[in-house]
Image (cartoon, rainbow, N blue to C red; front, side):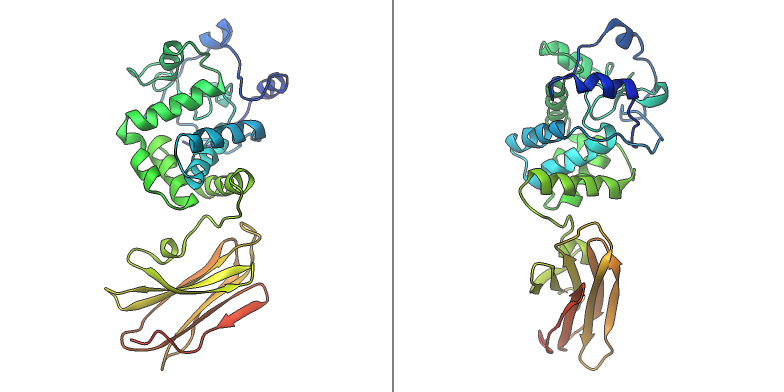
Length: 307
């Protein structure tokens, strides 16, 4: 799914509504529900303009999924997607007459009103709710996740980072290969920081270095960030990454360095939003010196982790 544009009349109508209640479908609105969908039943919108999120609905959605047993990072990953899709507005319809409807932009002719036992209109009727209400659409999202294995519940539950959770929901539930992915992760991180009570970098050191790398040491640069040293035994290789903890998403000076004893120092430095690195070197039976910088604060180890 790519991002959706908000219809101006919807914004005006929504201002007068209590947060999260949505609106009942009018005959005119129902009559306009025609269109086409892509292979997974979601609307193939190609626009880039996204609506401003409704903050109260963001919080409601985040708390809903946390209460269902998802972690705060997993819940934030879902809501980050919904913000880009619809602004978490249950009344929204895809601009230009497209088929997208509701918070996840389910497509008319598919998962909005057609697929057998897998469409929003059917689900709302089964539960005596308006198809346009936030509560019904959140419940339907959970129903789809838990009922149909192809929508990514397993991948979502196994996600330990905000970025992994965001991408799992994006690719499996929304059926979106790479639709403004960085924006989705950024929105999810903001949701976590705002409603999850933390300040989190959406990436993890092992995720940055790649499969098989495990953290073997770390050094904090105060509250600015942390330098991590990782090792992959099968390759006898080290990896260094410096993870920011402040000004996340803003490009500020960050660096990661790694030097194998007897060799030259390798560095990745620049103005980055979340981390510097990965810097990798094979270091079989040799010591390594590792370090990093955030802003003007820097640190470098002595030679260590030999072997």
